[in-house]
Picture 1 (cartoon, rainbow, N blue to C red):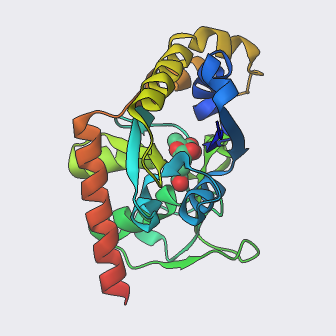
Picture 2 (tube, protein in one colour):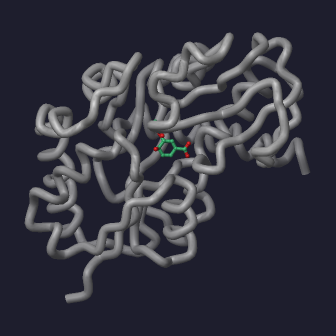
Length: 246
Ligand SMILES: C=C(O[C@@H]1C=C(C(=O)O)C=C[C@H]1O)C(=O)O
C-alpha cells in the first residue's frame, strides 16, 4: 500500500499530534515531514503531499480541499505565539514586516489592521528593511514579549473583534481520504493530546514562557463548529482584502 504523505508543522504547537502519530500503528502507513507552516501550505497546494496541517488562510488555494480531522491548531482568545510586535502603539503603525513562516497570521494581521483597527499600513516581506512593527509566530516568539514596547496577541485581538475563537491551521487533504484512515488518524491525534504531560517532559524549558499553560490552556485543539464558523468568517475578510487591494 502506498503511504499517505503528510506535512505537519515543526513547532511546539504540533508536538502532541506528532507524539500521537509516532505512538500509533498509523506511523507505518504515513510518510511524515515536519515543515514550517508556509511550506506545509505549499506542499498541500502543489500535491507534493496528500494532506497537511494547513494554515487556514491558504485552504482556498488547495484543489479539492477537505478537512480530514476533528482537531486543529486553535485558541479562544490569547494564544501566546501569534503576535504583532511593535515599538509604537497600533494607532501609530505605518509599516509592518510579515513573517515568511506564516500564511494565516500574516493575513490575520491584515484583517485586524483594516477591519478592526481601521488602519492603512504598508506591508513588506523584505526582512532587511526597518519597519514600525512585525508579525512573528511559533516558537520564535517564546519569551520575546518583553523585548518590544507593544505585543499584540492576535488570537486575543480576533476575539475582541468578533467574539469568536480562532483556527490557525487545520488538517486538510487535497484528495479523498478513506473513512478508515481518517478514523485511525483522529484516534492517533487524540492519543497525543491525552499525553501532553509526556510531551512536556521532553521539551526544554524556555525562559519567560509557560509551556504547560501553552499546551493545555492557550492552544485549543478541537475543530469545533464555532471554530469552523470563525474560519469561514476569516476567509470572507481575506477575500474582501484582496478585492479592496485589486
Ligand atoms: C498558533 C500558531 O499557529 C500557526 C500559525 C500559522 C500561520 O500563521 O500560518 C500556521 C500554522 C500554525 O503553526 C503558531 O504558529 O504560533
